[in-house]
Image (cartoon, rainbow, N blue to C red; front, side, top):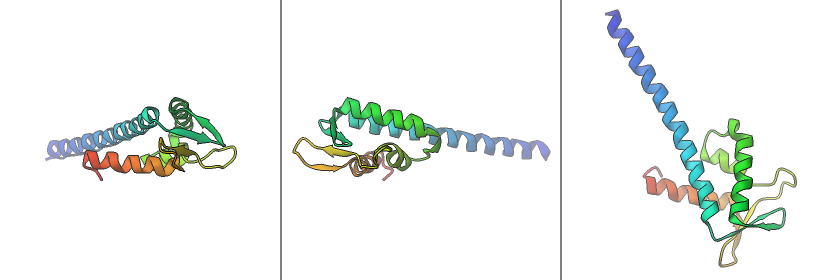
Length: 123
């Protein structure tokens, strides 16, 4: 009976560890998707009143992601910690779309995340 219990325990442990690994990969993939969404956009990104290109915005947010990586457990954490506001001034990051509309970057990315999850069937 003991070998059966050991096998069941080992199988459960393997499943739990693989589930955690998959979740971590999924988080990285989602964050990569959001960073790519910024980089590929035709918007202007406003940080502390200064306009930035999509490439500049993506590089800045990626650097903040690397800084906060240990605290980020979900895509929402990524948006809140890396892409919502300036740590220096506290001012929110903004996006100016090609039609001139300005909105907060965290709202823009939250909508991109919602669409991405819907496309994946997770939303």
